[in-house]
View 1 (cartoon, helix red, strand yellow):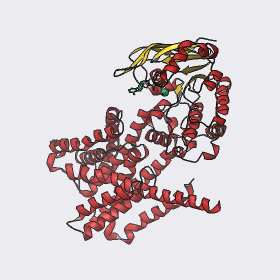
View 2 (cartoon, rainbow over the protein chains, first blue to last red; view 1 turned 90 degrees about the vertical axis):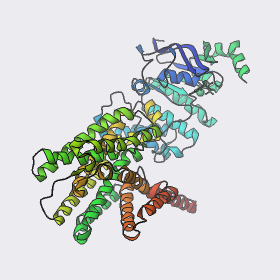
View 3 (cartoon, rainbow over the protein chains, first blue to last red; view 1 turned 30 degrees about the vertical axis):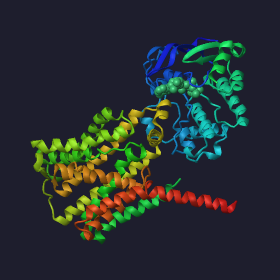
View 4 (tube, rainbow over the protein chains, first blue to last red; view 1 turned 120 degrees about the vertical axis):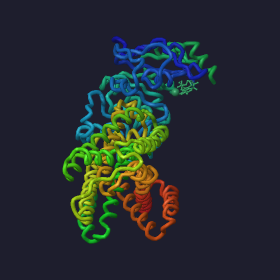
Length: 248
Length: 322
Ligand SMILES: Nc1ncnc2c1ncn2[C@@H]1O[C@H](COP(=O)(O)OP(=O)(O)OP(=O)(O)O)[C@@H](O)[C@H]1O
Ligand SMILES: [Mg+2]
């Protein structure tokens, strides 16, 4: 595998007295699917926030495609091609599902004047086909806020694909998804990775899914990286087992 | 979508707008005010409805328009019409400039904080205008005398305000169909998400405010001349009346819809005129009561209420078929 598209070095983030990220380091190679696991409250979502500039970090550095982005703000980082989805769904509730998709086109070279045009035919086609791929085509004219939680998760994933990121951070993509749909979603993640060339960093509690999907995993506990390795190594790691048992 | 219906309604309004002053010549001034109210509600809704940023300071741009136009008319030595034209042009520019500057400063604030931040704008502006001798200070400014009779004058300003309301509507309608409209809706629905997807949120927010400011500044220039006298507190920066009304009219008709502000302005203006005629002395109380009723019973406004009803029907029809 090639040079890391994302490297996180010694990133720390404190909320008052809580140390949510404590000198976290990890690397995501270009083209890979990397898993991020850990018990509830171990700091995974916070790490996503630290990476994409959602909150200022207290220390450490984040580099994306060789560029230091630690101090950049969210929209700028997103335009560079580093996009995250949220654990609690974030969609545009009063807008139709189709409009949610159409406003999610890549903003990389979006000129200001381009915002004064209507959506193009090819954009609508692409939006509809992505909606179809997550089973929401029939709902395309429905306000996104009317979707169920699971459907909103799927919509948010489709929006992320519409945005054509280089690196996509997914926060529990299968949470709330009907188990019979999970396999399909996993297949989609793989396809996005293989065909669209999107590198993935995925937080996931469903061990079967993430062990199956990820090339390499990081396990967090109490704000630190506890262990890393492939699925086999992580499964066998006593510290990981203890962390999960201890948390329960 | 509802394109054909929109065009029919617009054509009907155009006819009404052209015919009304000739059918009811005694009411031309009232009708002119109606179009002014439509501009108020439409321009407020760009931010308040479509983008979810409630502004209580938009009256600032109206006042800027009042004064700028009057100053150009007074000092630039043009004849009446050239002076009015130049004044309006400069008003638009200064209004947009003010929105750019203030927007940069306070559009980083979100939600309630932004709303509270805007509260001070109109008050501060009225205070400044009331103490600034170049623009008449507390005594206000008198606009130049219209070269013609009262009826011609009323008709003239009626026509201009009608044209302004019409072009404001058509412009906003086109704007809302562009990606721009989607972007400000996205900001309203979930600004964190809009940022996470890389939208230039600040740029959209400032632009939206500039659009509102432009139409309000032109409205100010026209209204100042139509009223004939610019008082800093009661006309130009009349936050307690115009400033509040623009919010109410948009809410009454339906925030965030294209037709809602137009409908809200029409109903509000009509009711207000009736109160003034039949409840003299109590008109403010009745208006206050009406405002409470609107917020309690029509939180979504008339358009929102209609849509819910229609959705309800659709569900019931669906059940009937099933
Ligand atoms: N905005 C915040 N303010 C204060 N504390 C926070 C904030 N966000 C997270 N925390 C705290 O930081 C710690 C890590 O939270 P985080 O959401 O990152 O965990 P997580 O690993 O994503 O958990 P889960 O698997 O349940 O989603 C928790 O103790 C949480 O209470
Ligand atoms: Mg989390």
